[in-house]
Amino acid sequence: MTQPDDTRAGLTGEAGCRAAGKRVAVVGATGAVGRVMLELLNERAFPADEIVLFASARSAGAQIDGRTVQLLDDNADLSGFHIALFSAGAGTSREWAHRFVAAGAVVIDNSSAFRHDPSVPLVVSEVNPHALQHHRGLIANPNCSTMQLMVALAPIHRAVGIERLIVSTYQSVSGTGRKAIDELDAQAGADLRGEAMPDPVLYPDHIAFNVIGAAGNFAEGDDHTDEERKLMFETRKILEDESIAIAVTCVRVPVRVGHSEAVNVQTQEPVTADRVRELLGDAPGIILEHVPSPLRAAGRDEVFVGRIRRDESHPRAFSMWVVSDNLRKGAATNAVQIAELLVADRAGSPVS
Ligand SMILES: NC(=O)c1ccc[n+]([C@@H]2O[C@H](COP(=O)([O-])OP(=O)(O)OC[C@H]3O[C@@H](n4cnc5c(N)ncnc54)[C@H](OP(=O)(O)O)[C@@H]3O)[C@@H](O)[C@H]2O)c1
Image 1 (cartoon, protein in one colour):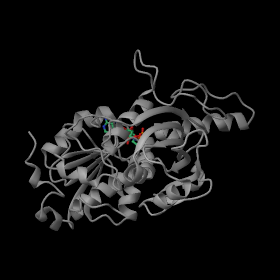
Image 2 (cartoon, rainbow, N blue to C red; image 1 turned 180 degrees about the vertical axis):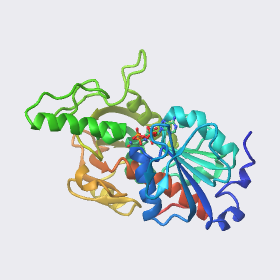
Image 3 (tube, protein in one colour; image 1 turned 45 degrees about the horizontal axis):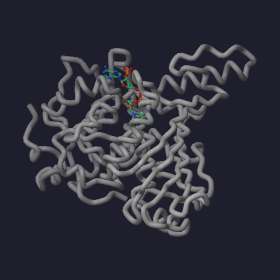
């Protein structure tokens, strides 16, 4: 069903030469991630001759940036795309990603549909671009909370090894999508006007002026949420280290954009807080600050790391606070960076 690997973007010298003249599909273009994807393709001057936007019947025909959103259905023309950026949920990816691949595109998928597949590389552009070498037309983007964590942890993992992680996330509502931002705004607006808040729809409790101690959903019989399971699985796959012990709690907070994480890292070899600062200060995609915040990280592509301090309860542990824009580096920026690597045929070298 799929084409041989070497006909695809980013695997041959010939593909590298085709940098100009790419046709790019953005599937889920009207969503929280899809809209940022489009902004980034423009902002980073991605070498695309044509960008085609797809969504469901709910918004087909809408205009975004002078382009008409196309309906993704059996009549859609999938031919001639070099790259397809998917952010339309796992169900849509399962139904459509292979069809784009069969028509010749490389699909970079933001959903959880293919992350567990051992034949699908799960890539953070600064961390494991080498994994792209083995793609067969499908590449998975990690979950947003895993993404920012990987950027901050990879330099530590490389230098001194990681034995155990204890992570607590403070995840913004945009991580749930466009409708969740509206839900937060509607509840907060009503409360500030002295009215009763509308009932929660997307979350099990009100999110305005509240904290929900379980981000994600519980699978039958599991006491961890799917967000927590994603972070555990994806961390080990990306760092290529099954030995890392991970304890994680994912929490939803009433922030529009930007996920924050309190991270305790137990290393294999001893490391000082100063050495951690040095390692992260030299790493691509990281900005060190004293106390980063999601409001200030929103709209930025970097991962902000602060509060780096020794864990006085353990001789080989330190703590840090990691913040990033979940719609940008947590999703769209990384997808576009992967596309840039493929187009430039630089799949083996880190992006800055
Ligand atoms: N939000 C984040 O921070 C984040 C981070 C990493 C990964 N992701 C993943 O990215 C994906 C999208 O997330 P989001 O937050 O952008 O969600 P969203 O705001 O709800 O947007 C969903 C998008 O998918 C489109 N869509 C839904 N069903 C479709 C179908 N059957 N055919 C074609 N298009 C369809 C929607 O189009 P309509 O306008 O027609 O409904 C919309 O454009 C999800 O898989 C999510 O897990 C999100």
